[in-house]
Structure formats: structure tokens, C-alpha cells
Length: 272
Ligand code: HXC
Image (cartoon, rainbow, N blue to C red; front, side):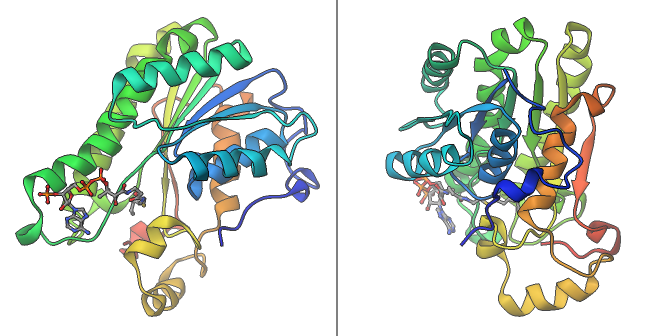
């Protein structure tokens, strides 16, 4: 079970409850683990959200559950959308704008991954992950571009830390995530003058996340916990807090940043 958020997020929090009132976020991967909690945080702070997913049931269920966090209940599920397909992304953006009238923020978080050594990784397997993670992120921002320009919006890409090293069995994801960092940096420079900020969040090992479930064993998680400088795995709330910061006016001069949220792990090599 993912560690989802509840109303206590706004209690004693650094953030004003209506911080994102009147704003709309468009999220790919919003029915997953990390992006779902990013969405929850924004909704708890007054944002409306459109979450885009491939699976109809999963996306609708997540939207219903996240809606319950807000009395306004404003989470729109947009289903049967594959981020690899630009036409589908354009259609998803149309649905979001039709429902809410605007898009202010984009979280490009849809990702695919599996463990596979290079010897067994087919060209199509490599391409599949690069297409979901990197091309999918491009398609997401490209499809939202007019709205971002109109509303002087802000982009968050969901990256990783595994490409700071050569991590075995992850050549496909490492290459894709490095590309995402490069894409974000280029957009920060190119779109900054137009009032659009672009930043990445690079999560480390986050308890309960899809990445941890797929990539590391319980034993490894226990061992790595001790090696993380902050002596714990990350929580989904840690990612939520970073997300709120990057979309809030508190970060209005932060552009082209890669915000690593990993307890300091990558500095000591405690990575996936
Ligand atoms: C080797 C594999 C494989 C595996 C699929 N392939 N799974 N190769 N090991 N475990 C190969 C297939 O054989 C095929 O190549 C090619 O990849 C495409 O496979 P499909 O199943 O047709 O692709 P598709 O249906 O599009 O599914 C994409 C997927 C799937 C990535 C393979 O797992 C998926 O949809 N995942 C979405 C959810 C997800 O992965 N979440 C993880 C997020 S965690 P051939 O040559 O046979 O045609 C995350 C953390 C990243 O991203 C950061 C980590 C630190």
C-alpha cells in the first residue's frame, strides 16, 4: 500500500491551505505511487488536477480517492492514454482544458522500468523504456505548451539518481532519465524568458514506491537504510513537499534545477 496523504498534510505545514487555489495541474502517471502523492499534495492545497493514465480502472479509482481529499473534489481522470502517442496526449490536454479551463502546472511522471542486464536487453525493450520515460515526458510538455505559455506555468519532470553512476541492469532507464535531465535543462533556458520554469525532482529510494518494489529486495532496503546519510528511506511525503516547493512562488527563481530528494544517498553511492 502506498503511503498516501491526508488532511494532516496541511496542519502544521509550511504551506498555506489555499496555496494553489485557482490553479490546475496536469499529471502523467498520477495513478502511480510517486505522482499520485504529488497530486494529492497539490489538491490538498487547493489545486484542481487532471491525471492521465493507460489503465482505465486504476486511473478512475485514483481520481476518486484523491478527490475525496478536497471538498471541491476536482480530480479528472483521463484514461486510455499512452504518453508515447502524441495525438493521445493532445486529446488528454483538450479534455483537461475543457473541464477546468486552463493548465498551470505539468508533472511529467509516467515511467516504465524493469531489471534487465544488457546481454538480455532487446533493442525493443530499450526503446520501450526510453519511449515511455523520455519521449513520453517530451510529449507531455509539448502537448501542454500553449497552456504553459498562456499561464506562465511551471514544469516538473520526475527523474532519478541512477544515471549519476553506471547502475547495472538499468542501462535503459539510466539513459532515459539522463535524457530527461537534459530536456529539462534545455527547456529551462529556452522557456525561461517566456515565463515558464522547468525543474526536475530526482527521488532516491522512496518507501512503498513502484521503483523500490520493482528494483530492490527487502534485505537491500534494510541495508541501504543504514547507509543513507539521513538513516531512513525517503517517504512519498518527502516528494510531495519538494513538489509543492517547486510549483509554489517560494521557488520563483528556481529554474533548471534537479532537486535530489534522497537523504544524501547518491553522494555515498547508496543508489538503486
Ligand atoms: C526484459 C522486458 C521485460 C523484462 C518487457 N520487456 N519486460 N525485457 N525484462 N522484465 C521487453 C519485452 O520483451 C519487449 O521486447 C519490450 O520490452 C516491450 O515490452 P511490452 O510488454 O510490449 O511493453 P509495454 O506493454 O509497453 O510495457 C512497458 C513496460 C511495462 C515498461 C515493459 O513494465 C510497463 O508498462 N510498465 C509501467 C509501469 C512501470 O514500469 N512502472 C515502474 C516505474 S518505476 P521484445 O524485444 O520482446 O519485443 C520507475 C523508477 C525509475 O520507473 C527510477 C529508478 C531508480
